[in-house]
Image 1 (tube, one colour):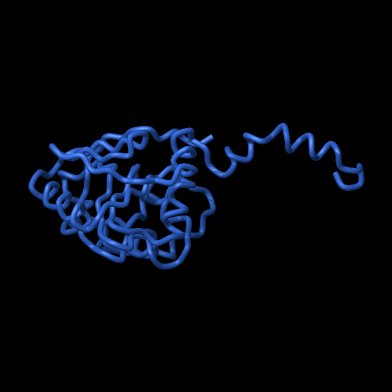
Image 2 (cartoon, one colour):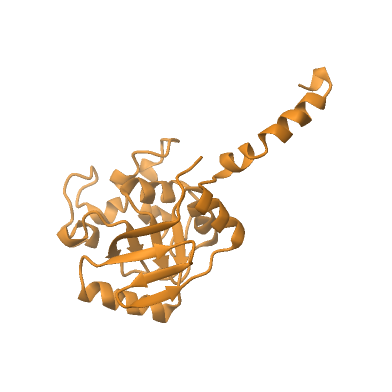
Length: 201
C-alpha cells in the first residue's frame, strides 16, 4: 500500500519555466538505480548545482533560495514532465519532498507516472497559474492547501477547482498503487490459480 493522499498543506516554490522535461528533472547519469529512493539529491541537478558532483549549489536557482527550503508544492508552467518516459522523474520529485505539482498541463506519461507514485499533478488554467505565480512571488513562503477529496486548491483568499478522474482519485485517496490494486483481488487470483491444472501452476 502507498501513502494515502487526502489533503496537503505545504510551502510553494515557483519554477517559472515551461516545457520542463524529464532530463532536466533527473539527468540521465543518475538513472542507474531501480529503487525509488535517493533521487531527490539529484533533482534538477544541472540547475541546482554549479558542478557535476552536486556539491556547489547555484544561488540563482529558485529551489536554493532560503525562503523556499522545505517546499512540498511545485508551481510550474505548461507541458511539465515532457521528454522521455522515465519514471525516475516523479521518484526524484517525491524523494525531494514534493507532494503536489501545479501546472497548466502535463506530458501524458509523466501525468500517469505521478499517480503511480502518489505525486498529485494538479491542472489549472493558464490564467489561474498566472495568478498563483503572482501570489507566490509577492508572498515568498506562502502555503497552499490542496484538498483532493474536494478537488480544490486554496491559495490566499481564493479557491481554485481542479478535476481528477474518479479512478485515479480513488487510488490516491486510498493509497493504492499498481501493487495495491492487484492485492485487492488477491483472493480471486488465488482461487483462479487453484483451479489450474497442476502442470500449469
